Structures are given as structure tokens and as C-alpha cells.
Amino acid sequence: MKLREDAKWSLVIPTSMGIRICPPQGEPVQTARTFQMQVTSAESNVGCVASYLGQPVKILTNFIKGSPISTMIKADLRSRFMDYEGPELEQGGAWGYRHQFNIADMGYGNRGARVWNDRAGEVGLALNAADFDLDRILGEEGAKIVHMSGLVAALSPATLQFCLDVAHKATEHGAKVSFDLNYRASFWKGREEELRAGFTEIASNCSILIGNEEDFQLALGLEGPEAGGKDLGSKINGFKAMINTAHETFPKVEVFATTLREVVNANHHIWGAILWADGTFHVAEPRDIGVIDRIGGGDSTVAGILYGIIKGWEAERCLQFGWASGAFTTSLLTDYATPADEEQIWSVWEGNARIKR
Image 1 (cartoon, rainbow, N blue to C red):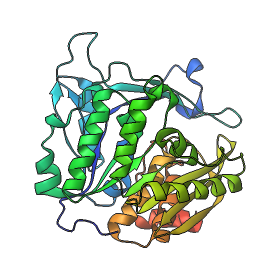
Image 2: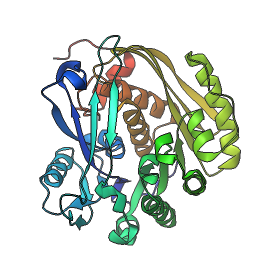
Image 3: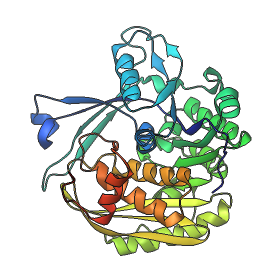
Image 4: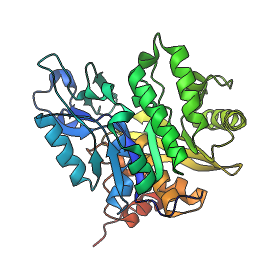
């Protein structure tokens, strides 16, 4: 994939930042009395492999003027080696804007993880392309890849238009657009026609499109196989059939990808991934991984794949690094990857868990 060589930013990521709170040590939310609090968003998670490994990453988001949560978010993004930009909006009183909250327990053993999203009134609902100098960011400065997700696009009519504007401007200035479909039925209720049209337009501008076969069918309206069975072999075959259809509809897409997961228990998963590029499927065959916290594994797989593309690696190597980045993140309490170096990720791919001195 040919990327813009003179771009200042390896990744530009529009997102709505928020806060995640989790009980320690895998306790369920209803019995916990202590919570760990961290900054989060699915989209910023995708930037972390690149930012920790030295690539310039820029976050586009809204902040709340004078909010200590906004201050925490900015400090956290800086600690992840990320640049950020966005307007400071007035909170508007106790019933005004706030940052989203994500309340989650990571599960333990035979008790699965549970997540509650609280996004009413989040400041990201007001994301507007007019608040960002996109001609400067994507034109004068330039981006190799602009990554966005269906979670932000489906938040509100305003955020859908924001994502459309960013996708069009990125294409105009020679950036590759990456889009993780992330279909959520609760976001789409009553807005199916509007969101289907918007997602289809974004996908038409994409070079990298991520999602499972259900995402492609429900978000883009493509005909495909019925949802695969629980076994990963069925999921692999279903994804391959879906991508053959999707590529006919979206011929500009150069890379399709998805993750594969079978849950043995909360701390033991079977993990795989598939990537299509240049008419060829590459499969990271499912294998066992240990899990501390499953949340963020899929985002980090995308992160590893995008890092490989930025580095100019061949498709199979991108997929391997993506698989390992996802597996690495499930071994952390953060929902994003924090690699010390490439070798740490490659050791996960190679199955080398021996101590390094």
C-alpha cells in the first residue's frame, strides 16, 4: 500500500474520549468497592502501538473547558506519546456536556466480562469538522492513515457528518482511510436508513476496512452467509465469503481484516485473525492465549496491522504483528497496547514467554 511520504502524522484519529472504571482483580461491578480509573476510547486505543513504537499520532477530539476529566485525558494522551487537538466546549452546567463513562469488569474464570456504556450527553456528540482545520492537519501537515470507527460515526447525526467530512478531506489530501465498522444495534435503533447510507459512503472512501461478516451485513447491507457457528473454522469461512462480496462493492479497499475469538473461559481464549490484501487471504491460525482483561484486544489487533502498513511490511507480516498486538493487550490491565519495542510483540507471536534479562 503506497502511503503519503511527506506526511507529518503516521496516524490521525478522530474520537470521543472518555473514562473507563473497573474493579481490581476481576471482581464484578456490583460487589466492588474500589475501582481503577483510566482514560479510554476504542479509536485512541488503535493509535497506541504506533505511538509507543515511535510513530507520530494525532488525536482529534472535543474537550470540556475547565474539566478535571479533560485535564486527565490530555495528560494521559501525552503519556502515550500522542499529540491531540480539539475545541474546548463549555460544560453548560450540571446537565450539560461530559465525557463518556465505560463501566466494566474483566470477568474471571467461568464468569464472563460485563460492560456498561454510559454515553448520554458526552461531549463527543458535538464533534464538528468546522472546529478542526482539516486542510492544515490533513493537507499541509499530512497523514499517512486516518483511522475512525463506527462507534463515533453512529453516536449522532452530527458525528456521522463529522466522520463523512473527515473521510472526504482525508481522501482529498492523499491519506488512506481506515474504518472499523463496529456495528452496535443499540446505536442504530430507529436510524438504520441514515446510518446505512453514511457508513456505505465512508466505506467507499476506505483503503482499509475492518469488521466481521455480521458487521458487513448489518452496517453495509451486504448479502452474505448466515452468521457462522461458534467454531472458528465456520467463522473463517464466513468471513472469506463475505469479503469476496464486499470487495465487489468497495473496489477501492486494499485491506480487509477481522479478529477471531473463542472464549474457553474469561482467562483463556483461542485467538486468531484474518487479513485480505491483493486478492489473497492470510490467516493467523487460532491458538490459545492467556487473558487478564479481554477489552481492547480487537482494537490492538487493528493497531498492529496499521503499524505494519505504516512500516511498509508485507501483508502476512502485518497480520502476524496485529495478532500478537491483540494477544499482548489481553495480558494488560489497560485496554490498549504499551509495547516496549517491536521485539516484545514478536515474542508473543513466536510463543516465546521466557524471561528476557
